[in-house]
Image (cartoon, rainbow, N blue to C red; front, top):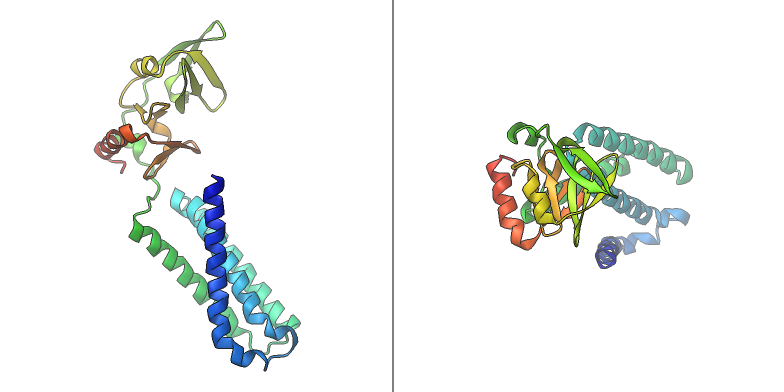
Length: 250
């Protein structure tokens, strides 16, 4: 995770430096003609624009739009862009005494829309997975009204199937995750798999078995179940893909 984070930071810093460098090449002849803070104005604009694009792509686009929360995505995007427009207008006219603030404001909107389009094209071209549509419960038969019976701390527990999000293997124990509580029972994953009804419950790796009724997103190497990203095992990848294709999910 730390390695991935460093890679993202380095990639974005290089992108920002490249953007500023390219602008400087064409701007250096006019740089001395501007007075005071006006010399830095284009670079501050590019710095803020780049930060906004990264925030949009990584937060708004991925966490709202790609997870089928499009109304929230549109509301937040328009709100932030409107606030940025008002801030730019006040900043340009009051701080930098710009008499015609409309061109840089239009430039902000054009660059923003272009950045969004390039990022969306980049994802689609590389085949980066998009979230699942919320039609899984219509394809998969309703969760059985039965219960998963197990022993926890010496006491018999009866956990309704519909409450189970996923199961995680802990050697000779299994962790049963529900919204209210996580139960740990002495059981192998194979035994747990045999007790749970198919096709509602699917094994995705040696360590995890999921309730498909709570799948939110399918990616190349992972499945998100109730906000938790679980890795798909290499041995199970083809099986999981074929199963979800047959059920109309992918």
